[in-house]
Amino acid sequence: MDQSERDQLRQEVDEVLHGQKQPSEPAGFQQNDYSNIRHVVGVCSGKGGVGKSLVCGILAVELARRGARVGVLDADITGPSIPKMLGLSGQRARGVDDLIVPNRTEGGIEVMSANLVLEHETDPVIWRGPVVAGAIKQFWEDCAWGELDYLLVDMPPGTGDVPLTVFQSLPVEGIVIVSSPQDLVQMVVGKAVNMAGMMNVPVLGLVENMSYVACPHCDEKIYPYGPSRLEETAAALDVEALGQLPIDPALAAACDAGTFERDLPEGLIPNAVEAVVRTAEFYDALRGGEGA
Image 1 (tube, rainbow, N blue to C red):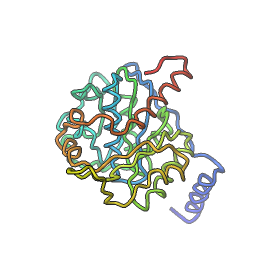
Image 2 (tube, rainbow, N blue to C red; image 1 turned 120 degrees about the vertical axis):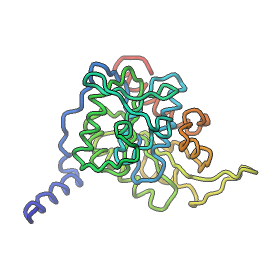
Image 3 (cartoon, rainbow, N blue to C red; image 1 turned 120 degrees about the horizontal axis):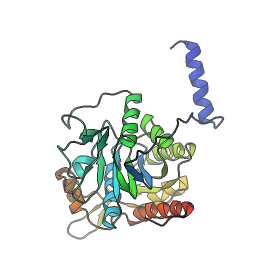
């Protein structure tokens, strides 16, 4: 890239950041005849390692327990964890004609993930951005999802190619953002909130993971990362605080063992679940339909 190309790229980035123009939007991905997905909700984070997949799994399981038909599109192509935590480790998606059939968990949650199409789940995915974006397109257009009330999209951290592809090309009705109680949280969450605003995607609220540890003897809450920043961050960014999750070794063990769906305690982040349901009901009302 020569200097003139660098200057042109810098100018385009500056125009986007200062609101002088919006990023170009490709045509949205199309559903196939074997998919009827009513609501799409993303689960995002500004940085890695905060428990985004954990929150996505909780939302999926809790919605399924309410009788909803739920799917998870694992868009974290290079670091997929959804199949293992939901008991699908070692399984492979199958093809029928020209379509991919997502794998189904014991509780009936449909799942599509890069780990379900790799020969070995530990194989690295060494793809450039356009190829990763193409995989998201395949997971949407070429998968026979069937009838779903909710499709939850577990996105990779940050504001790169995959979140951009998802926001521009899928009918995302809102996102839940996941954070943790460190000093950097407000900055990195702010990046995710601002990206959603630039892409006209509503932010349903903020969930703080790893907020505390409950003493097994007296239930006293211990804050290993310092005091919670959930309310402070939510207020600063004008989003709803949707709840806290503790550091729970039993929950981590269930993820590792693939028994998360069975062993998940009820009522961990009820406000987050309700936010997803309210959003679905709102869009159903706009379309003149009934709630999921």
